[in-house]
Length: 408
Image (cartoon, rainbow, N blue to C red; front, top):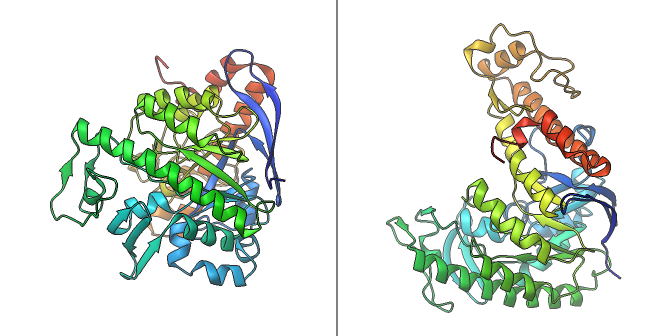
């Protein structure tokens, strides 16, 4: 039996949007769902109960960062992430692959895995599909992700960390170069093809390792569909990944530099290719308009660092767009961040006071805006679930203009 089950509760009449519930060993969560990101085992600056009070039912932990510090073995000794962090609800961990490519000092990637140096202290690591499974098993999250090869965006200007990640052959050893470069269309196409082939081989190894661990009924393994912006490659990868009878599937590689139109194209193409009786997860997305478009395509789960990262920088999300609270015009503004928001910040503090906190370098400023931003996204998801339930997308557009830009 799988550790994860999905129940489809209602299908929207005018789109592929659906209302559902995912059940895990640590409880259930409603879908579509937004997961706050706890990179280092914490939603930065916030108590677990405060995160729960925003409406979050599941949170995400980051395998790469927790592997480097404090180490998955220590967390296992402490009882796993839920016991160690104080978050008692469902948790998901990513595989570490994206961070290896984007943050790690990449030494070599081949079909066995990735060798890299920690961005913290230069310590050397070798992350393979089997190692990723072991680390995530030790972390103890309810949902774990397959180790995949995530290529950069087609238009991304590669920096010295990931220039090495543009191979001509899948078995070539790559070393860093000192000069930045830009992938040509041909190089990008080849990179996507190699990433897909490697992702599928690594998934086979992840499934084998996870089954051998004896924790198949304790942790649900999700497969990841790659393919960049090449829709044929997306189709190929989805067909192959879904050959495995996994409890859920994810769309990866669409939060690495693409614009909203490209994200929407990939998601609308890929989501219907995934099993309708399993949860579908769009990794690393994102902005309100991207979430709404993905929900209408049939996606159930989302995560992004934007709410807390922007919150720590005094940028607040509202139903009409982002506001930057360090702006001098808010110095004498007695209003809350957003009228009608029921978060603890908006019901107790003014824009004027919050701006003062940032001007004075008081940590409370980042905490208050982070709480508001997390509640903003949970309110959006609540209203999305209501719109699906009531077949009322027009009312959602009226309440959330930021999610329905002109022409969308």
